[in-house]
Length: 324
Image: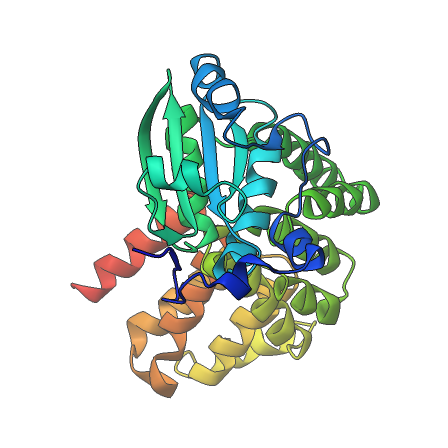
């Protein structure tokens, strides 16, 4: 049976004679460019894979220069292996040049990926899988996070710098992480937060667009999106809350004044005060203005995150009102 790629395309003689330029596209990390990634052939397969896997797990990527999905999977796989910093190795097998290896391992479609430990295949998959799935595959193989610890340490330091008011230093660190791991949701969220702190809402929104598609719903991204929404609505809110307080004193049933006061309080940094006003508005008329009070509360909860004590207390109070 002829080999096929994951789109169903058969390997033809013409495909096997693809140019060296195409081959370079398929193998973005040629042998020698990284200590963790190498090409192999039939003569060296046992040493590069079977013997090497007794020390660290070895991932074997079966590819061909004419295979479109291979060109999508290969760079992602190489980047994640590099991030693992030696906890796992990658060996690439060009099946055009090494059909014997593919035949011996019964590889019938590409890309195919096998993982070896202690000289034996232990896992594998076929096709160009999403990066999140690929990251999980590697994490499971090495029993930990695929090289993320260094990035996590860097982002923890960046978060501390941002908390201390050193926005420039934090932005530099988040940017460096994104150079190594483009689209990292935590780094994207951190960099966007830096722009929020500096008041550049437009660049914050643009930065959020850099996140990997499979991480668009990451908790950190949602939190910054919610914070951005609050900043944008707060920019339109009154900065002097006294007139709104006076309106409510004169007429506690003025729902618009109470809602505007909540926005103004949050814009002035009094988030707990804003939550109090929104909860009171919800208690008085939960359906006012198309459920505006509850929706704004949810935005506040998203911005603070699910573990923030204010979120926990606010959700508890909202739930008691919902079921009262």
